[in-house]
Amino acid sequence: MEQQTLIQSLVIAASVGVASGAVGAFIILRRMALVGDALSHVALPGIALALAFSIDPFWGVVVFLLGAAFLIWWLEEKTRLYGDAIVGLLFTTSLALGVIFIPDVELLESLFGEFPKLPLFEFSFIVLSAVAMGSLVFLFAGKFLFDIVAPELARIGDRSRFWDLLLLLVFSFTVALGIKLVGTLLMGALTIIPASIAKNLARSTTGYIMLSVILGGVISFGGALVASLYGFLPGPTIILFGVGVFLLSLFARGKG
Image (tube, rainbow, N blue to C red; front, side):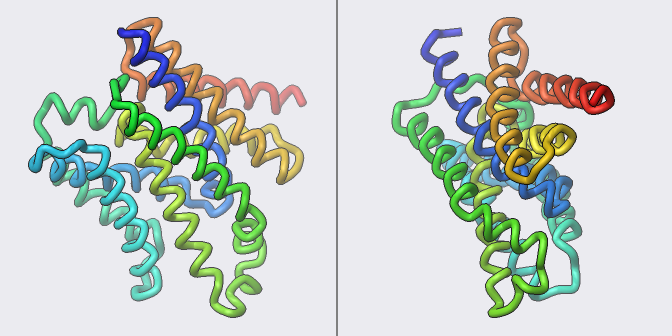
């Protein structure tokens, strides 16, 4: 692997991991973990459509995931279905379309990720966007927490729907940023694992959020580094690395 590709991949892993840890902390508190995992699969039709028009699949992923966030938010208001049911329908439809229309070679990379060699603009866009997503989560952390802890009060003035949408958009965009490296099949898990570990270990809400952020960066960077050293696919390696840390956190919690 070229040194430039490795450096790009490790920087993307660290930045997207930090953003994933930040937004994942609130996804876990909202009990949307399975929603988050399924949402990443909605990117598959975007990849297929982009390939059909010879466009970089990344942009198809961004458009489809942000569109899915708006659709979920709108359907939650217009139907009696819960968010997880809506995402489940989108997940199965998207997975079927992706498997049918994405070529076999591209499908493997789409599902499990790769070490991408990116032009400077796209690399910079992913890293800076990941930093922006993490910053947005910290900026509005109080609003997100209030909406979770006191949903009835948050609905006064009908503002809670806006924060629901913003969290969904930040989450969807963060997932989109990491799909090239981690893959559609596993990227959702990267937002869940750091927050799950942090919830095992943290003793306060602030500590929980900060620990989730740190763990997101460490797990993603460490997993990508291990994958590069041993020639593994980055997506599965990052997730298995995170699962290993999660198991250690159970042991540490038991000792505490």
